[in-house]
Image 1 (cartoon, rainbow over the protein chains, first blue to last red):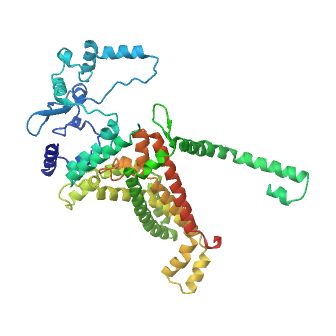
Image 2: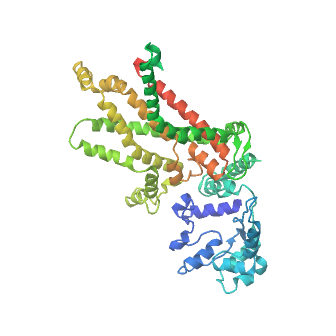
Image 3: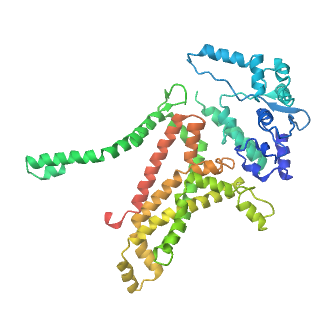
Length: 194
Length: 305
């Protein structure tokens, strides 16, 4: 991780990153679409958005390259949640089964979602944009961080993770950024409601 | 009641005064209902919530004072207090430093004084969120005004992202807030200035008091009430600051601009610790009341001592 941070810092030092990146809070999540950006690390869901909504954009997709070769990715994030005590459990079950059926997977993929069932991915992607295949390859190498505090730790705009990435890449104190993120994350976990 | 007690007249008078009192109560009833429904009851409910572990979904659980004891060791809350205090001091000083000269300037009857008053007051009628959005654009490194202008003038080598450092972002926000608020404080101070009888000023002038002496020993003491009002409004507004940080920097860079209200918002509506957010709100309410009482006491008028 240290090496990855250093790689990003080098990119900033060499002026390869726009000045606006330091305050990018994700409002223009898919800044690719205005055609003014060369490269963006972003979730695979955007392949579908680009294919379906921006057919005019010519783009390629690859996994995030590692420092010493190889590739990395992470998977997960969107969950189907069923509230306790719902009277419609059988309908929910039926919907989930449909969503994971070959037919359901196909419909999702056609509308820009990436396939979640690897065993039938070939069948799902048949006849669709070949770039979606990269998302399937990503699942092979992807890691899935798992926590019930995902929003507090990672996703929210003021999370230790969001703060860390900014501090580590644009700040002056990389070691401090690591230490602070570690402490803040631990504090949130410790304070979590039992 | 007082009237009935001091007037030892029985019968008609007492009945009439009682009816009179009921009528009075009737008149203020709508206001009382509004205050009750939209302030008293929500505050009581917030107090009730603050004693619970209250998630957004699921069952609230009574945990007594644990939300309150947690605050004492909550470093993020403590740093939010520190930042809010810092911001309040800087903004209040900046607003008064600018509003007082402006008020003195527009107080005197001169040509076009109405135009000046309108210009200084104009930003006040813009919403704070709107103003924040406007300034976010002005401060945008690529498509805004400040950075490209500085670059075009040759003052900086390449565009500088004002909002990327604490100093740049904080300065931008303070300038925006002063621009937005100073007209309001100016109007408040202006009413105070105009309430000073001109014969007093004239008498002081005849007695040979200089401009500064008149300001220091006549204007300032006579403006105590106005100053107290302006100060309380300014400090309360600054302590409750949220919009500008949320909109302009999302609390950044690196969470350096999380105000107390921002932290309450995050705890309540991002992390869904509604009970803890409620406890924090109650503490903030108490702190604000204490701050206001302290200011009123400091600026109390002589004859009330």
